[in-house]
Image (cartoon, rainbow over all chains, first blue to last red; front, side, top):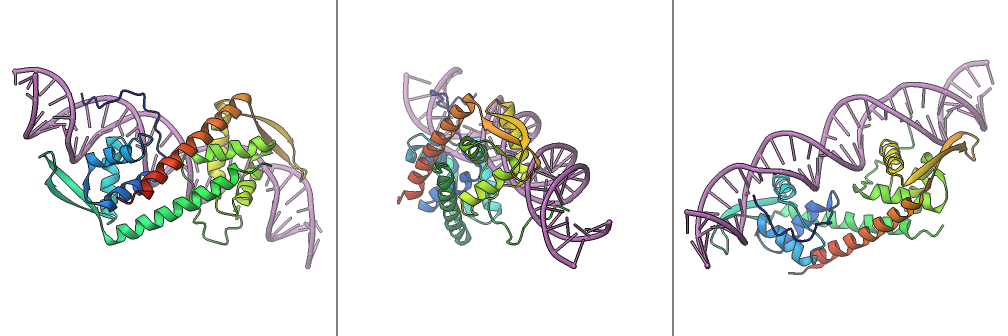
Length: 117
Length: 117
DNA sequence: TCGACTTGCCTAGACATTCTAGATATGAGG
DNA sequence: CCTCATATCTAGAATGTCTAGGCAAGTCGA
């Protein structure tokens, strides 16, 4: 029944397109497995960003298929088997490109939102 | 054959979820028709944001159906018939909610992107 | 007056991504 | 033994955007 914590009614929406960037970013810090990615992003963002597993795993396959992530089965700190993801060389480039694009987008949207007339 | 300008290969991607907010914002400035919304957003954002008509009109129906926009047929400055959209009361609330959510999202993503470890 | 271009609205169908709602397996602790 | 936390995975629905057009009417130059 996989109940999760789920205490607060999660209002945390994620924008399409940002998920890949966030995953690449946390995987760039150090190799990390899927379950931990969710927690890490939630922790860093102070609970503002919550990723569903049903979004995460498809995204991980996507990123691996595109050659931006590589994976390796290891044993987690909790002693369970886990698939650790890390960035490839092109993944690092991709992360750079995506963050640059994100900043451009933020700037552009800020322009519109700040228009007083 | 509706050719548009289309000179530069448009790289301008828009994130899902931001389109509604942008439309509400420019419609909040003054009543405006669809064709002009595209140009206005492009102009304000200095060409960084380009909205396709195939995205725009479905979005306009969506926003009107949800009661955030109301529309009225008028004659445009160019002397053609055009459907002018303006915000409803709840549309104004919605715009406030969406901009607030957008800012929260930006802050949260910034936190993740700035994590050095 | 013909043709091309611009303004303006609209739509069908493809596509990508996220969400819902599960299933499964294993180790730890009561 | 039972439950909880860890951990991966999937099918199918829902959503939203893009592609790729179509239609109509006014403007302007040749």
